[in-house]
Length: 59
Image (cartoon, rainbow, N blue to C red; front, side):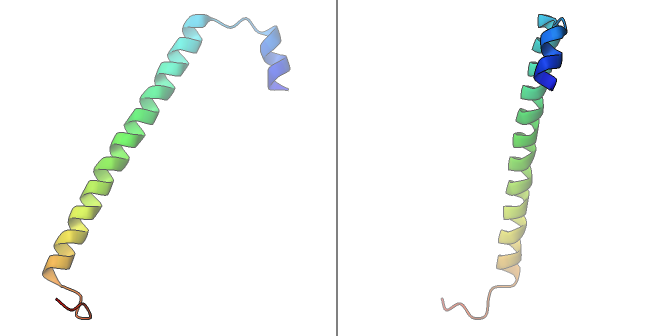
């Protein structure tokens, strides 16, 4: 249904460009945020393991 509607609408190239740029920006922002959160999680896990080592592990 949306494809039929698009064929009747006049699409502006500028609007499509803005939408594409915003979408790419959102994806980049989400990836950067996820990496930062992952690094913080790994750091917390490492600190937790150092403070309270697993008693079942043999060194």
